[in-house]
Image (cartoon, rainbow, N blue to C red; front, side, top):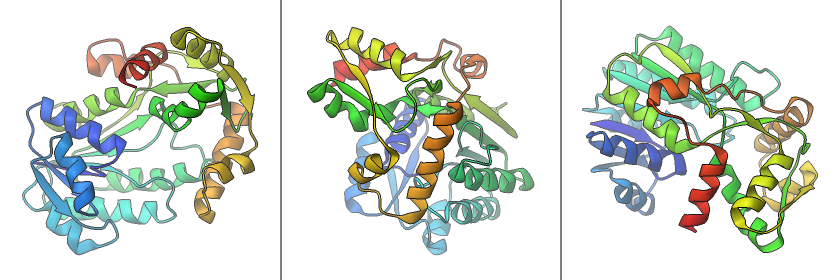
Length: 284
């Protein structure tokens, strides 16, 4: 039995599906019954209702599991505190394998949310757990938040330079790696940077979008403040973290693009951006 945190989210759902495909049984950790239905639909055979800030509910969820997949909530100020608590409780519960979804280049100090992920990584390094740290590049499914606007306006806008090179990964590939690490031996006590081959700036992305959609898509800039307003983000920590992230992308991009590790673990070529877009168009 493997416990998946964030079981009703995009990442958690994908991991559940990958684990079930690998023959594992899954217990999904969710907040409520509505979220439980999503996790069950993804393949979870058991549900643990709880709150990440409630130690008792986490302790109950950990009972009888051999493995854990943990991904933190997005852009929360107490991410490190929650993560360290879960790591320590998993150690006390005798969990055999622990997979943590961190982020590519978690050691970049300018990225506020990366600092918190790095603290959780350090907690794992200090633990006796058989851990695997996954460090994915920017997730390709992030474009879905802009998908309807792209289709309706023919414009793809982001709050950083269109020249910024960005490394990507399809989360379905990351989920497959998580399932491999949790169900097979040889992947413990390690951290893996996961990305597809190459990097793309927004100019190149709109070219691919235009080709895949069969009509012209243009690139446009949007200010960070306007982006935050349109996304209705009001939490001070999240606003600061996202602002720092966009400013960093503006200055340096988010470089990576070496698929050696991901290719080696999957035993195949990772999904490229064009293939991801084609799959998105087909599924819509």
